[in-house]
Image (cartoon, rainbow, N blue to C red; front, side):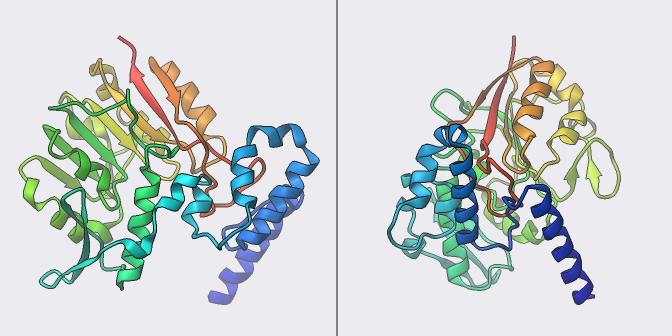
Length: 307
């Protein structure tokens, strides 16, 4: 079976590279290979290069070997986050690692086998949510308010909800990967009266694996939705039509970096749903998925319901 999967991946890789004229990147390629392809592509198309000059200059700058999150976020702010400086603790009773995140315990699941893995992942999270990052859900004018009801769809570690938990009236956390169950419940144990956690996919259908926001919340007020679900954003919005229609001051933070065309498609869809939208500043180089020119992607859309 492993051999069959290996052959299948090789065929997929060759087909993708042929389709993208040799400029395509698969996530098992080396970063040096990606850099060479990018430089060759932009040398052939110099007008496109101007749009990404700052990012390319950072990636091509000589110096020490960078960790991967300073490639994903190709700006100097990413280098502030040295994973070696992260302090990790162990909950002996739960057998889980945790860090102190803005004064609160943030737990990591059992797949994090050692402190180094936790340190690296936490440093990545901090770079991801730096105020200069294109992946940062909030900015100076797009914020969570005191007493908001929040939906965190695609929570993973739960750091977004943890930062909002003291302001929020209620938080609904959705994480389809049940490996996070014990860690999330440990993180939010002090606020279990107002934090509700669901281990299902959020979608446009209801079944054993999936749920619709409209079915779960019915006519309950919602103020803020954060959606980071690896390309399933459209189905989530389809399953939340009533919730979106009924909440006049709703804000959405929706990630757009998982697929090349997400930013254009989701922007158009949100405009049809009566939202004003703003793209976050900067770009990501999302090396954990296959990439094609021009490689760089916007991190997210911040959307506000028009009155």
